[in-house]
Length: 209
Image 1 (tube, helix red, strand yellow):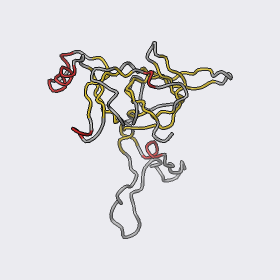
Image 2 (cartoon, helix red, strand yellow):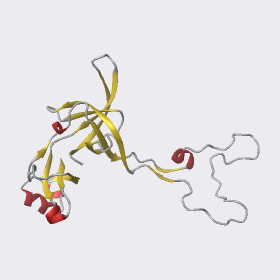
Image 3 (cartoon, one colour):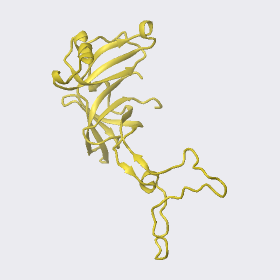
Image 4 (cartoon, one colour):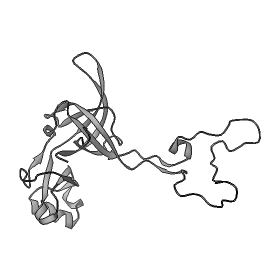
């Protein structure tokens, strides 16, 4: 990963291209991220940046994390994330990473936590087909058969069943940056990205572009 920034998903809207086409975009509010720690190969075995994002009251930060901010000489932030980079020589503790690291037309990956749906059945969770809606003796149209066949008294590992759906780390790759508004710290990404409104997402340069 060469560059990345943390931001907040504000929602979706649309913009007009120069040829008049309507482009659906997701608006990400990417306030400046502050570097609080730099890791290098000599000391840590790899190159990475630890960045902080989001405002928070000082009394809500625990002592270990508060010590990290005091050592870096920056105000406490709500979220800490680590970004792998190829070279850390051009970065310094206390430096800000702003949305202008990305430009219009650039390909990015967006990582977020998908919207949680709670406990769901197999039809919603796995898009399975329900049973026939006949008026006969079948009263369990959305139930699942656990049988594996004659003489097999077990459920095979990996069988798709009802359970918790959503709320997992999700990555959408190769999205296009449509517009960057540095004055308002906004990045407009073409298409949909994971997570609910006001959810924290990470925008990074595309790894498969």
